[in-house]
Amino acid sequence: MDISVHRTGELSAADRAAWTALQSAAPVPGAAELGNPFLAPEFALAVGRCRRGVRIAVVREGGEPVAYFPFQRTATGVGRAVGLGVSDAQGVVHRPGFTWDARELLRACGLAVFEYDHLVAGQRPFEAYASGTFASPVIDVDRGYDVYLAGLRERSPKFTRTTLAKERRLGRDVGGVRYVHDERDPAVLRTLMGWKSAQYRRTGRGDRFAHEWITGLAHQLFHTRSGPFAGILSVLYAGRRPVAAHFGLRTGRVLACWFPAYDPAFAKYSPGLVLHLRMAEAAAAEGIGHLDLGRGRKEYKDALKTREIQVSEGWVTRRHPVAVGHRARRAPARALRNAVVARPELFDPADRWLKRWGKIRSK
Image (cartoon, rainbow, N blue to C red; front, side, top):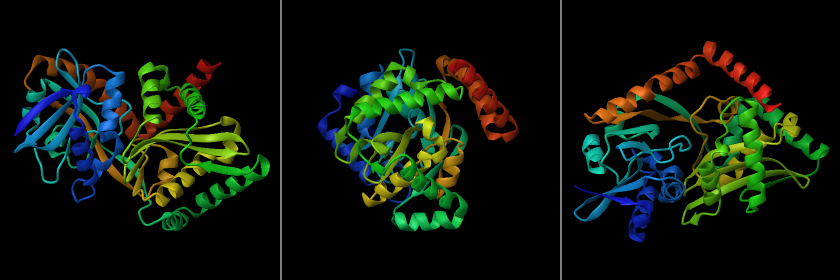
């Protein structure tokens, strides 16, 4: 097994094509989650234009590429998944049946430790070091939108009936409801970012778009079109006014949901839920297999999901003082956060406190 490590600008067109081909073959059993757009070369390369230290390890057998491992590396050898903090799928993209030794891979990449928080299923050499596994809800539309909607009506009849009624009322009260699945106006993307920043502040969360690299990354991906990969801005309009929007990433069979938000002035119409139903309908028409709603506890995800996939977080470490120090710094905070999120008796009071703090901060 031959492992070479490249800067993002050094990755050849042939390697990018081979990487994409491995993703296209991902629906085979045991590798289905590798088709996620956060594992596409376009995402890693875009992060590399916004952040230092992004590298791509290429694994070859008999001269042929069999795996690609994107990561970020510090000068001291601390490795993180590409886009850690905003990436909802991480791991090694590989051909079916390929396996690797986790520590050998780290050694070849010059890493003392590799940290991940959304490791996709099937990465057994990395999963052995996971500290926790978490649900990531998905909406299956591979059998068509009508089948999905019929299932939603059966599982949650009141929710479905109420949401569709609110869509009709939105049209009557505000103006004709119109959905654009792939909006190309960058001004609408800026509107979405403004809504999302306000939501982060209102709910007491850190504003991701206050970080220049995340804003720059979203703009780059909005303008990226490469084979099956694209940044997709979906917008729900009432009359001529956008009332809800979502920016995410797609590959051939997966639409990864990323940044959804809506105009709070229209909250009584639940425009975010209406938007997600329209997204599911459009995705099904385009041949998408499922929408990945991403890890995290949210009521709307529980209402819309058809099933859950699993993602893991943890550290792969070598015997190295840098690895010991990094894990000692990061592990306590992560363990506390997960304990709070996993227990309603802790999460609900914490969530209410954050929202109160958000209201104070927003004044």
